[in-house]
Length: 218
Image (cartoon, rainbow, N blue to C red; front, side, top):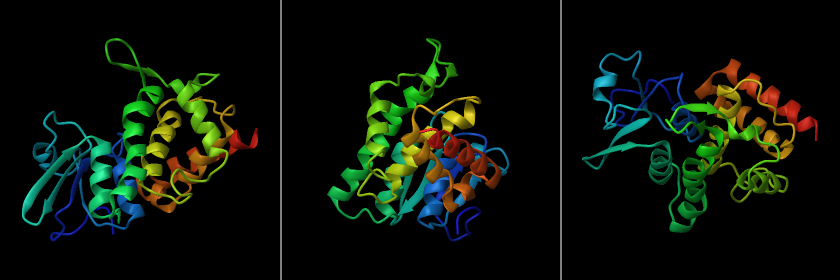
């Protein structure tokens, strides 16, 4: 069971619901991995214990056969969790899914979150029509498959799906009707029970309904 975890659980996730950090909770809910939810706003002492060197979230603390593990950056955390708890037991499996996790952090994030030269987020690049090349390629790809790797849901979809859904979550009025395949993919992600568990029933329903509306305009 995800969420509060138990005193015996060594896996701690530092974040809070009002940030981007619940994508980590989403993946843990998908694989049914227990963890201790160290909400930095509500759990006493959590902010002080946060292992991120800059005090940011998400961050992770775990135990690996007596050796402490501390991680930050959502992509690094997702790849670690998929490796240790998610059954990615061969280099090929890790590579096939891990490359999408890295792509989400390195290439999709700057599209979803457009920043000013001062580093302030001002808008989402998903509004751009025609879309940038990466989004156009993703739109074509998702017209032929339901999920990113082997047509089965994986950590790759958590990383990519979460960032795409952030565009609607943080930038109201975003119209994705010109990206119907991506919109349908986002709706599938938001309808997953584990996504609902991590982000909440109300937000998940609102996102899924909006995306389904965009997809129907195809």
